[in-house]
Structure formats: structure tokens, C-alpha cells
Amino acid sequence: MNRRVELRNHLREQHNFRFRLAISAGFVLLLFLLLFARFFYLQVSQREHYHTLAEANRISISPIVPNRGLIFDRNGEVLAHNYSAYTLEIVPSKAGDLEALIHELSTVVEIAPRDRKRFKKLLEESKRFESLPIRTRLSDVEVARFAANRYRFPGVEIKARLFRQYPKGASAAHVVGYIGRINDKNLEQLEASDDLANYRGSQYMGKIGVEQSYEKELHGITGFEEMETDAAGRVIRTISRTPPIPGNNLTLSLDAKLQEVAEKAFGDRRGALVAIEPATGDVLAFVSKPGFDPNLFVDGIDSENWDLLNTSIDRPLNNRALRGLYPPGSTFKPFMALAGLELKKRGPQHAINDSGYFSLPGSTHRFRDWKAGGHGVVDLHKSLVVSCDTYYYGLANDLGIDNIFKFMSQFGLGKKTGIDIEGEASGLLPSQEWKMKRHKQKWYAGDTISVGIGQGYNLTTPLQLAFATAVLAGNGTAFRPHLVKQVLNNNNEVVREIGTHPLYTLDLDPDNLRVVRNALVDVTQPGGTAALAGTGAAYSFAGKTGTSQVIGMKQGEKYDESKIRERHRDHALFISYAPAEYPKIALSILVENGGHGGSAAAPIARLVMDYYLLGKLPEEAAALPVDQEDEEGEHD
Image (spheres, rainbow, N blue to C red):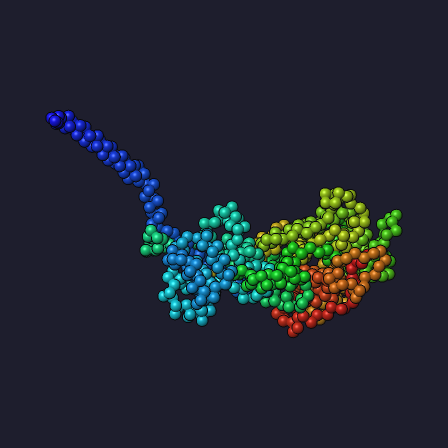
């Protein structure tokens, strides 16, 4: 069988080979062109963009928290400062398995659940190369124990950090305030004010008092370090360092020793005291009793102490001086007397025959005087000395509520004083317009009568009463009350002074002022309602007692303190200034449920002024008479 042999076409094969080779070469060339195009795009067109990204990955910025400014009283005594303590910290990028590391670390140094929770939150908010605290305020024993085991814990180190401390404890706590951990609300506020960048790395900020209202001054300016890191986030070297600028220091107008004298004078009683220098507006003492220890809040208050403070019936967290609202009682009368003189409704010699009550024409309702049977013939001077209610019932009726509202507003009653800490209450000075807006009712003549002796709808804060008293002591010149006197830089050079210019001066007749001020001096003399406090004083001082009702009394019912629960008893008030001729200090005092202003509140004023004017320390400030009979006040 013959087999056919096919002859190969070498020319055709060569052509096909060359064709396939050309196709392959073209494909390879196309790939090279695409690669070149990509290379050109990355290296030329997008060079700046990727260079920036590369630098961002290579260079990291770590914040350096500034030292917080210090707070001093007017005499240089420290009220808030920083101290150094050891902190156990972890750099996550160097630590590896964090859970395993923390578990092992807890066998050497105690790490509580709250420490773990705080660390986890910090980890979420920070970069992995930042050093984050897992435990603060280590003891020397804990530091030594960790140092012996340090080789076992990569990325863990001990650092010395500054912590806030309030050496006076509860004294002036409502004024100085405290710092606490930055929460979500604080972050929102910082973001809204464009201050968030300056708090990078910070864990604390002011929460109340001066620490809060002067936060920007105290915080300082955050510094930073530029560091080169590798792909794993480990630091290779420090490129540059911009040091932080420490916060400014504050000098308060507060006198720390005077503050302590005033606080001790209250003993275990609840209440408030505000002392102001009439010629400057400097707040010399600012008491709210009971108080609290601000050191409890610095690193996060524990649940047990928080429950004790938050559920206490005495409400120690409430700043009574700033936002406690109380009827001013008879401390309202000096301003009423001045209004009667200024508006020509009364003269110094104008007198009434006080039979012990006042009734509106055509009405059988009796507004009783505190003294059964009345005070007999009473002129303006005597009305203040013996605190005659009947005199002021009639004066209020003659003035009318609109005149009362307009005149009293000039002394800062019914509105905020503008003091330089947050949370001030505005109080309430009633008017016809207010009642219609608030209660949808018209104003009645009987409403005016109660307002005349500081009762009815009247509500004021101890701070407002002190401000009004300072204006009266200053012959009508008003200075805004302020707690911060100076802002100083880190070298204790004055950056700025606070509040030395008057807000306004009232156009008051000097003769009318003299009549009222002379009567207030006699209030502290024999026969006056504050004679007990004035006994043996080495200086002349003016004052006015007050008693404000907590619960109402029925018509004809007599007030009997012994039959009323302690927290339903009347509040005791006293306003005062001294020396009477050239006042250096003006103050208001409130003793909650203290009874009578002359026996419960006025002696506190005497102790405070004795120290401030004479340097005299009370031997036993808490041993004050509280049962002295002084039945001043309305009980209807």
C-alpha cells in the first residue's frame, strides 16, 4: 500500500510564525505602554498627591498636653494646683496583643474594670502610637513591682504626669469648681467653638466654678511632636518638637482665710453668704453650705460618693449663693424706704400709728405686723430699726407695684448680676406684666402688700442681695461682682485686670441715702433687731435683719417654731456693711430654716467682719446663739 506524503510549506509556516510573533510583540508593547502610562500618571501627574500620602504615613504628630494654670486667692494662697504622680501607660503599636498584655499586666499592678473601660475608650479616640494611661496614681510599691517585671511588657512604661489638686478641700468648692474627664457633651462644645484641636491628647477640662468659666485661660496651648514611624506604626525617630504653652494663672478676689471663717461660722447649718468690696465689686467670700470635696471628681467620682452627694437631703452640690431662690423678707425694707423717699411718697418725719395690722380700704383682711399690738408711733427711721411690717404694708400700697419694680430693678434685684461663673439664677422681682404672662391673672392690690415686706412673689439669691447691699453701701455706685481679680501668665506677669470700672451710678438724693443709712446703723444698736450682733463692736456697722416664710400661715394663726418641722421653719437673713461711714465690706447671709435674722444670721456677719476689719479670729465660730427671741417677720 502506497502512503501519500504531504510536503510542508515552509514559506507559509514562516509567514504564520512571523505573524504570531508580531501579534505577541504588539501585545507586549501595549503592556509596556500601559505600564509606562500608569508609571507616568503615578510619578508625574499624581506625584504631589502620593508624596503627601507617603509623608502622612511616615510622619505622625503626637500632642503634648500643656500644664494647667494655677488658682490663687487674693493673698497668694494656693486654691488649685498640679502635682506629679506616676502613671502606667501603654503604646498600643508596640504592645502586640493588647488583651493578653493587659491580663498579664494585672497580675503585677491592680487594674480595675473601670480602668479597662477608660483605656478602651481612649484607644478608640487615639492613634496607636500615642501613649495611653491604663492606671493612674501608682504607689511607690506598685512602681517598684512593675520596674522589676518591665522586661515582660513591651510597649508599657511608667510616666510622671501632672494631676489637679484642691488643697483647701471643700472650702470654696462652689467657687473654684473642679476639673473632670471630657465627655461627649464637652466634645460637642469644643467642636462648635473650634477648640477641639487644642484639646488633642487632653483628658480633662473645667466642669463648674472658675475652673469652667476660665477654661480657655487655664488650659493653655497644646504642643506637638513630629515623629517618623515605620509601616507597623513604630516610632523610628523624633523629627521636631513644638513645646506646649502652659495655661495662665488666676488670682481670685476671694480671701481664703475669710472664706474659712465664714464657713466655720455656719457650723452644721445650711445656708449661704456673699461678701463684696463695695468700691471694686471684688467678691471676698462666697459660701454655700454644705459643700463638697472637689478632689473626688478629678479622676472620676466613684458611685458610692456620687450617691451620697446626689441623694443627700442637704443638697451639697447646689450652689445656694448663686442659684438658691429665697424671699428676701425684711432685708427688702431698706430699699423700700429709699424708694418712698426718692419717689416722694414718704418723708423722714412722716409717721403712722401702728396698731399691729394693716387693711386695704373696704377689706376685712388683716396683714399683721410681727409684733402683736404693733409698735405705736413709727416714722421711717424707727420702721427700719424695729422692722415694722405695718409701715411697709402702707408704703407698698402707696407706691404701687410698677414703681416698686422699676426702683428695685436699679439695685439688681430680679436679674442676674453677671458674676463670672456660670449657672446664676435671675431671681424674681414681680410686676403686673410678669403675673399676667406667667399666671394669666391680673395683679391685685393684696399682692403688692406682701411684696412690700419682701414676701409674696419676691425671690432673690444671696448674691443679688449682696450686690444690692454693696450698691447701697457705695451710695448708688454699682460694680459687677467678680471672683477673678487678675489673669497672669506662667511668669506671674499680669495679662489683664478684671472689673475695676463701675457699671453705673444711681441718681439718688444724698439726704435720702443718709436717712436710710443712719437707720441701718441703729439696727445694730440697743433697741434694734440686730442689737445682739452689734454688742461691743469696735467699729460701726449697718445692717438689716430678715425672716422669710417657707410655709404659709392661716389668717390669725400664730407662728410657733417648736411645732413646725425643722425644714419648714422660716429662713433667717441679714444684710450688712462696715465700717458704716466708709464701707470696706458688704454682705448678705442666709441661714436656711434658721428662724430669726437677728439671732441666727447677724452673729455670723459679726464674726466675718471682725476678722476682715480687725483680724480677729473667733474662738469657737460654731457656738452662736440661735434661740434668742426676735420675732421679726410676717406669719399670716
